[in-house]
Every structure is written in C-alpha cells, then in structure tokens.
Image (cartoon, rainbow, N blue to C red; front, side, top):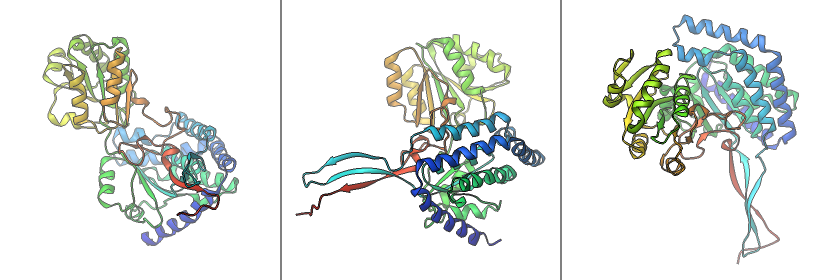
Amino acid sequence: MDIQHYMNQLGQRARAASRAMARADTATKNQALSLIAAAIRREAPALRAANELDLAAARAHGMEAAMLDRLTLSDQAIATMALGLEQIVSLADPIGEISNMKYRPSGIQVGQMRVPLGVIGIIYEARPNVTVDAAGLCIKSGNATILRGGSEAIHCNQALAQLVRAGLQGAGLPAEAVQVVETTDRAAVGALITMPHYVDVIVPRGGKGLIERLMREATVPMIKHLDGICHVYIDDQADLQKALEIAFNAKCHRYGTCNTMETLLVAQAVAAQVLPALADRYAGQQVELRCDPAAAQILAGYPQLVQASEADWSTEYLAPILAVKVVADMDEAIEHINAYSSKHTEAIVTENYSRALRFLREVDSASVMVNASTRFADGFEYGLGAEIGISNDKLHARGPVGLEGLTSLKYVVFGHGEVRE
C-alpha cells in the first residue's frame, strides 16, 4: 500500500464530508447518533468477540496490565459507549449559536458564531471506546474525523467503524464523515499529522512516547496532554473520613488512567493520623508507597515502602505505586504541585472554605477539585456526554474536551447598508 496516497484519499474524503457535516441540522445529527447507539447495544456480542481477538493477540505479545485494562471492552464499557452517545444527543447543539451581539456607533451589529473546526484527526492507543466517543462528539459538533487507532485494537475498531458508518448513512449523512484508518503501518500517523491542507487539528490519546513523537513531527495543531501526574492534598482542616475515601479512590479505582492520583500530599499536623489508616487500605491492594523521610518515619514497617527519589515526584506510574510526601501546610502543597504537576488534575480535601477557594485560584491545572476524587476528571462525569481527550494546554481548549472544544468562533456582522467613512 502507498501510505501517503491512501492517507491523502482519506483526507480528501474527510474534507468533502466536513462541508456536509457543517450544513447538517441538529435533528439529522441526533438521528445518526441514536442509530449508532442502538447498533452498539444490538451488536454487543459481535463487539465482544472482536475485542477478544484483540485481547488474545495483546496477551500473546506480553502487553502490560495497564494497557490490557484499557483495551478490554466489557459489557459495562459497551453500555457506557451507547449511553455516552445518547447523552450527546441530549446536549444542546453549539453549531450556529450567535453570541456577544453588540451595536457599534457605525450602526452595524457585531457578534460571534460558533462553527465546527472542520476535520479532526484522532490518534489513540488501546482504548476502543475512543472510536465511539470521538465519532459521537465530532458528529454532533459538525466535524468530520479520521481515526487512527492502535494496532492492538484493530478488530474492535473496525467492527465499531462499520456501525458508525451505517448510522451516518441511515441518517442521510456521508459515511466518510467518520473514517477509521485501516492500516496499522506507523507511517500512516506520520502522514496524518503532516496534512494541514486536509486536517485542521490533531487530538492524540496515548502514551507519552506517542505524544512526544507528535510534538516533534506534527505540522497540524494539536489538542493534547502529555502526562497525568495528579495530586491529592489532605489539609489539616480536612474531614479525615472524606480524606481516606478520596485518597483511596483516586489511586485504586483504576491504575491505568490519566486522572489517577500519582502523588499524595498530607499536612504535617494530620499526617500521623491519616497515613497509617490509608496505608492499611493501600496494603490490601498491594500499593507500593514511595515516601519522603517524614512519611517513611510514620509508616515504618509498611511492607511495600520505598524511599522516594527526586524522579518520583514527576513520574506517572499508571501502576499500584504512589508517591507520598508530608508538607508543612497548604503553601508548601501548592508550591510542590505547581513545580511537579503535569497540569492535569489536582484535589484538596479540606473543610476550610477560604483555603479551598485559594487552592482553586492558585493551582495551575486544567481541573482543580475540592473534596472529590481526581477520577472525576472525565468528560462523561462532567456531563459532556463523552470526551475526545483531555488538554492541559491553555490554548485552544483546557481540561476534558467535549462539544464546545471541537468548535471555534468566527465574527459575524449585520449591517443595514452602512459604509465606512
């Protein structure tokens, strides 16, 4: 296969489809989403069978546990994909919305209209649910998309692509509005990220190696995050029961996700109360604790205790490993977070309202939480229906990227025959 020629064909078809998608009305887009959701539920056995082919190949190649977890398409995951599409249907369509209208002294009215970005290239590894999440958000926001999933999910992604195409055609929309790259050749990625004449933005969802490569090579703008080094700070005015539940859930709910806590910070005044109780719960999950000297002294005797190194404060483990540090107060916690965080998600546990607001203001991350697990940093949990990714950049979108993040604004002007003097 001539990869460049193949990718150019996908790009040409996507660009043509994007014009039809930009014209599509809300009812038509919603119909396509509903048809796809119904097909996913109906074809659940076939999707699980395709996923089993991918899982068998992944195990044979020695894929690590965190990636196997991402690759697995359980009954719940299939139901969640369909539910996500139905939630997108229920969301307001942002396209065509006009805002900020103002009269100017000349007599003209100036405002802004929300419009699609155009063609979105999405590159992802392992997670087949991204195929549906991305397709749903792009359809509702009036965009066309080219999806390049990882080779490890090729069977499942192709099965899902067939359902998406059928749903688009059933609603009278072009099937080429959502195209899944059929080759596993890595050269397809290189082509996709260097086609600015066909692709308007790239959204990478994958490991650090993939995103670092794209940052070096891409000529198309990206919406991305590199790491998920997330923190929970337990303040000395925290409700300790809340603190235990939040710190346990943030680490142990799932290890292989970007919103999992990787560093726990505990105020010195409550460390002796909090850390042993938490350690008892972590021990049940065989979590390795990489502790600073103060935390290590409190937790002496913990079976999986390791002295933390400097590198631990800036490591995304994606595993049952947690860095633990005792800090003097919130000032030191904020200083540590802003120094080591990947600007993804941070949380404070406190009953002090003033401190909570200060933490929200001063922590420079895409999602900042009070008395809640970092695991909530997710488009579905935020009510976006699904997410196309999470951005820890400050331009163009930040945090979970849903419908609005896949649009742009253009100025519109209404006149009555005015001419400029």
